[in-house]
Image: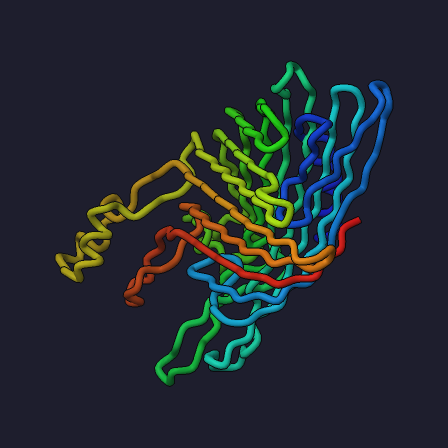
Length: 357
């Protein structure tokens, strides 16, 4: 399975985006930025920048679907690899990012005293052709998943933390393929706009499928493992040095599905459910009242401040805010376990050692 996925990633490398060859900045944080490369007009150049490091963190996670939850001291490692090709007006950029971390807290109870709090595997490939001073005809592909099982922890009747599986490798997995235009007015800012974007959601574990709004086959009673959406996508990126020792990085991306993406609880049903005003069994069991079809909104905002202490040591503050109406949690009352989307957030303050090449 993993070999097939890797083969698919390589095949997708024929799609990509980018910008001004005089200002290459890869799609990532901290030391994940590519180097500026000056080349002759007709030369073809491959560059392979990258970085690796280890961070010690103070971390806080709240309702984050793939990473779990917690607030304490943690340790994580990262690896970022780039392969970039430039020639004339063409730039082809490929980026692979892997992050994994653990958290420990004396407040944890139950069997899992050391828990996962960072788990990310991302592959981007971009191809761009310059058509004017600041505009590029672009294609883009992005694949995201996590390495291992993720859990949400809830206290049982004995006050012990009980682990509930919420994710694993390719459960979920996301693939976006976009065609559009990118505006690069300067080396500090870029805006990618795509009216045609395909977004695919994978969930190979049927038990986790309800967490990601996978539909159930009424005949077989089995959940789908794949969902396709067609919509519009945007990505705004800002990346610059505030001072010699302080760096700012931000990305804001969003996707809106033209076709029906998922079913959501109606406002009337949520109001009734939250008030605990049990009206009638007809109201509770009427699916036409309980759910309504919605178009898919997905928004993710990453923000980072990096403070350089020395050549290899840095302090970073990172936040990520995410909303995906297809990633659901249950309402507080466990009698029904009704799914609904929630805003997900994580924050880390890290002191780390990193090496770039």
